[in-house]
Image (cartoon, rainbow, N blue to C red; front, side):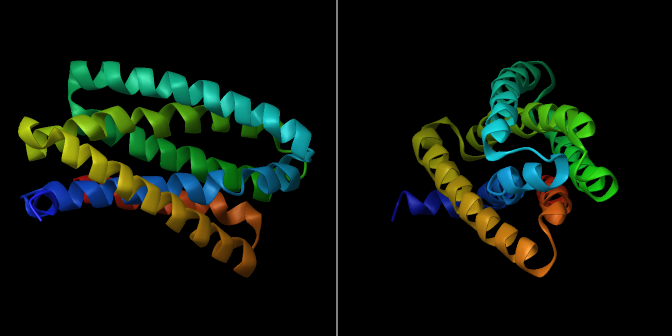
Length: 189
């Protein structure tokens, strides 16, 4: 009961919801990135793995960049750059798919790199922000809750992506991911 009381502390729940919206947006796209790459860029699933490697390398860079930028500029400033930049990358993926599919590899690759850098540069400042909101004494609990809210977002993103590709096409996952990122930004504000 005492651990869950942390959620009711001022500012904690909206900050956790920000994590969920961010994770939902990221996983609307990530869950279905292989069929997206096949449709938009004409890649086989084997070659999609190379693009996922690019995403992973850029995500590592994003985490490092986000941590460094958080120390220098503070969590809110970093998030106000990372979240709209992620939205821009995701919207770009949809635009590239709608405009150039199945030959959109040239615009998709830099957008995937931008996605990795921007989306994952959000996470270290988000953790710092949660610790700042909840206080150092509640750090273990609030970071555990953050992971739970993140995994909830991953699940919601996969489900939302399924709805998108069922009702429209895989090309639109980027636009929906962008909407989630902008919602995370609004919640963060």
